[in-house]
Each structure stands twice: as structure tokens, then as C-alpha cells.
Amino acid sequence: MIGSRVGLRSDIEQGTVEVIVEGPCDGRVKTDLATAVRKGLAEHPRALLLNLTAVEQPNPALVGAVLLAERHSGSIQPPVPLVLVASDATWRKLVGAGLMTRIPIYTTMAAAQDALSHRTPPFGRVRLDLQPEAMAPSTARSFIGDTVLAWDLRALLHPARAIISELVTNAVQHARTPFTVTASRRWDLLHLAVEDGDPALPRMIRPVQREDVPLDVRGIGLGIVARSARAWGATRTVAGKVIWATLATVPTQRRT
Image 1 (cartoon, helix red, strand yellow):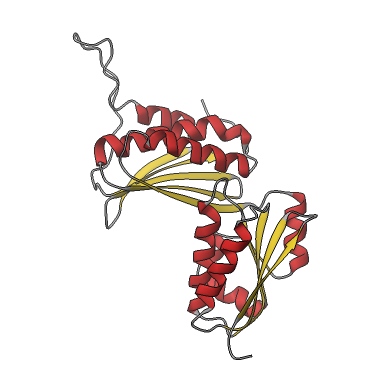
Image 2 (spheres, rainbow, N blue to C red):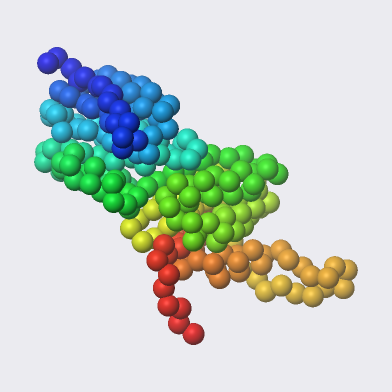
């Protein structure tokens, strides 16, 4: 085989689509894989399985192709979970690139299918790029709501929507730059983040009574975030900052 070959196979009974990559990784693997992933996602399957067990000589091009597949699967509404199946050599390459912290990776198709048949995959990551516009908070709430429901985390629907609404409103009102909303599922944690282009970190303030208005509410949104999340914070980045919040998918006992 001269180059990689990419194919599609649908499992109507399971409601999944399998993207199969075979042969050595060449320069076209990223393009061909992206095309196959888009075709597979057009069916809006329950999950997209990326079968890399027949890949020969995995290289950085394959890692880039997988990351692009993750972005495509997370960009549709509701997002479609991406699950990888890889041979030992490819598995080591992907784990070495840090993909196991982002996408579930199995070494056999049977193990992947068993995981899908018993539960929602314990990993997932979706993102949405937005402009600092008035409708951005509403768009972000719908995006996170769809994601939470697709991941079968209904108990987190209202707190997740409330948190992302406050974080996005902060980006629109204060950063005033294009920003990215990200949701990540890691086992029993749901991680929400908003990254914008303003390096100024937010600060939580107490609401104060003023004579001209009943209540000055600027700055109290972070109080909602703090009360709803297990943990939250803000960190400067090279291009600005990211504000994040984490919720537990399994209720935990709060200390009093």
C-alpha cells in the first residue's frame, strides 16, 4: 500500500459510524480523514469511532488528523462523542501526544463498543467561537445545554447554563474581544471555560447599596459561579486570559 486509505462503515443497530484508517500515514491522511469524518457526522450518529488499528508507522500527521476529527465532532449540535481504537504502537503515539486526556482510546473494537453500549463515554471536549455580541450569552447557554444533555448530565443542565452565561457575559461586557467557549468532560468532572483576548483578570466584589439604583449588581456574577461550581479560577494566557469553572457529575458532600 502506497498511502493511507480511509473508509466509512455505519452500524445502524448501535447508531454509530466507524471511520477506518489503513496503511502508512502520508501527506493526505489529514485531508482524507477530515472528509470521512464530515461524511460520518452528517448522519449525526450516537458516537463516531475512529478505527486506527490498521495504521502503519503512525506519525505527527496522524495526531493532527485526530485533533481535527475531535474538533469536527465537537462543533456540531448536539456534539457527537469521538472514540478511538488503536493498535499498541499507535496507542503509544497518541498517548504520548496527550490525547488520552482528551479522547477515550481503546486497543480493541470490542472494548470500545462495550463501553458505548453501557454508558456515555467518560471523555469529551467541545468548543464554540463567538464574537462579543448581545446574543452571545444566549448562544453559549444553548450550546452548553445541548452538550450537557448529549453527555447525559441532565442534573448539571441548570448550573452549567448559569455558569457559562456569567462567564460569557463577562467576556462580552469587559473583554470585548472574540472569545472561545469550551466544555470538557473528564470522568466525574465537567470543566467549562471561556478564553478571551483581555489579560485583565476578573475579581469578585460584594454588591453594595447605592442611592441612585436599588442595587449595584456589577461584579456579583462571579458569586453565582463560585456557588454553583466545585472550583473556579482565572489564568492569564499568551493572548489574554481564560476563566474556568468545574462541576462534579456526581454530587459531593459540601463542607459547612
